[in-house]
Length: 347
Image (cartoon, rainbow, N blue to C red; front, side, top):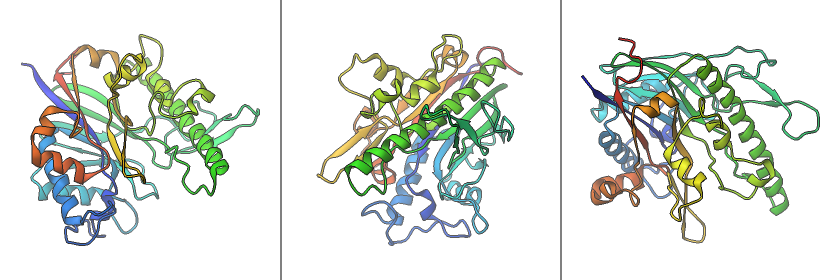
């Protein structure tokens, strides 16, 4: 019997601010961290978006904080209960101090899932564990630089419909020159941030290679803060971080149709997963969020959807959903619907 598994990645802008320390939703009239949006409006919008997604599993980027006083897993479980979501169980990885975690919210009736980090803490490894450090020469000065993830990727092993899959949730380094005082400083910070983002992508690609060598079915998903041709500094480094993670060898290459569209350079309209307001009153659309799959997963014939309220007909036609997508976050979900089982089933 053939069925389907729907997975999604969704960057929820400052999800953390919608919960108190006990993990309860704050859905009152106070302002959220989103411009001119109340917490009540944002929570209701997020509930509507997650309900519409109706995913078996969602990789939540910028998930609620985990610290000594707060538990992101409790907050997400409470959110799921409030809105009656099937995806109500939570896997979280290595906590960080940015108040933006990566979490996997899933339906326990369909999926079993565990945090399963790969690698060790050795700095000599080409792919140490994601909460460790990578030593790499970022600027060709023959000196090794230390690279860390501020938000370590979440590695999840899941089983669904008799099939094992590896998921890696990613929130890569932002390249924006935050804190710059002038144009020269902005350029310096932007280049430094791109080096770090590219190093993270090299690190991630090394992990992908390990999974390919092991014959794993793999999905890499999340916010990469990058895309082919996204900024003028890409020429300095030869390629984007997205191209690094996708890889070049046919046998081990990952695939995302939206990245493939942009890399083909044959289209005028570029797909977008995020929409940011600019100071001049206009909006910037950008392709930042991806769901990349390994060869056997692609061969199963999955379908992708960016839930962009102006670029997808069904999202636009559903006025309530359209408004919810705009209210909920500055990113839009990207979903993958995957026929199951495929290839070599474990059942």
